[in-house]
Image 1: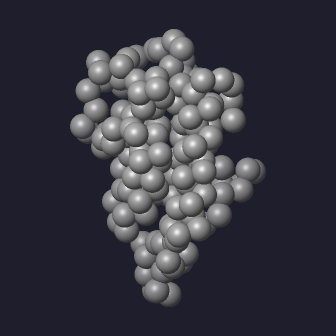
Image 2: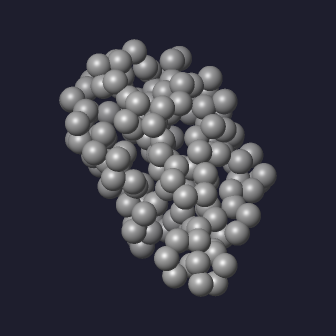
Length: 159
């Protein structure tokens, strides 16, 4: 299986840590959105798309890349994110909009992953940040387990 992880990590490097863990398990190439050559994406069996969460959304550079993608068939993808606050299905389901964009492009999204990350942006700066020390060792171990599950998911159905 040939895999690619497309990510953007801006403030604290939280998403980069997670992206590197996933790429290490999958033996995947790591690229930032502006490094992606859209015509090369057909070479990959599995593509991950991830970023930190900014005002309840993935980074605009990642969303813009997905908007530019052509329709595909039989291409598997997964979505991941880091956020200072816990993901909750009905309130903070950060990954759903990106997953929906990928589905519109014809991707079979086999999994989503979210991890807490240290944040000192905006009002959080006044109190020294939120989710300090995250992602931690346990988070990165969970990330590795997620990536191991992707290996099986890329062959079969949705996780």
